[in-house]
Length: 274
Image 1 (cartoon, one colour):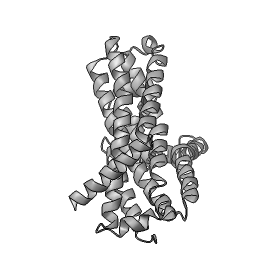
Image 2 (cartoon, one colour):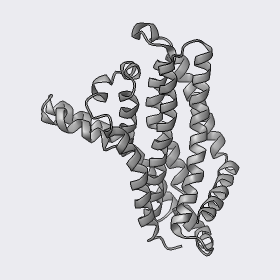
Image 3 (tube, one colour):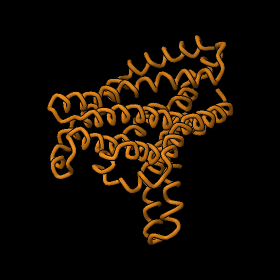
Image 4 (cartoon, helix red, strand yellow):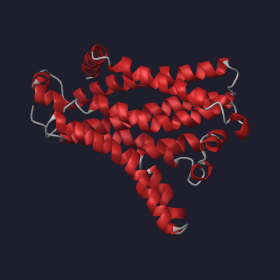
């Protein structure tokens, strides 16, 4: 079983390299991370924190938007596209189960995302450290950002597979992926913000709102990074929201999302006719 999963992962990794997905994702992450690092140097004196702390806060916001988008761009075509092109029937004619095929794709795509995020954020951290603007706490925050960004990417990869399996075509899968990103990353927070404004500091704001934030993988990622570091939370302006929940709530939510989404993708994949 493991050998078959690794064989599929190797094939998918070669396809990603051939299609320049790894190169493009790495360039995007590196350019944005470096831009935010230099752009974030201005407020360090006013906040009383080092350059990397401010950069990590900025890169956390970047990763909330960019990691899900890259993950969905990689995964939306994985099932619907292969079924449309006829290659899915060929793959399933081999002695490999659908779960093994899904896990192989997941490992390859997650490896591509992890490489892009490590190089992108790592380059920003290395340059900042060379400039003398990094503390041990900020370096730990950078490492945590890379790890949690990979987990966030894993969640949206699995969501992408589920949407791809539910879609009838690659075009429909692309539309569902775009809609899923818009709902989970943008509209969800706008809806919560509107509810908080209407509630005017009532029970919803104090009791329900923090837990609804942890229910979303993008918000759980943001809260995990901000709650783990007082300096990053201060630089981001989310110190209050980060401290309003138990320490385990955001990490547990973010870790459960890839597992739950992969299970949903497997159920949806079982109904796809090759």
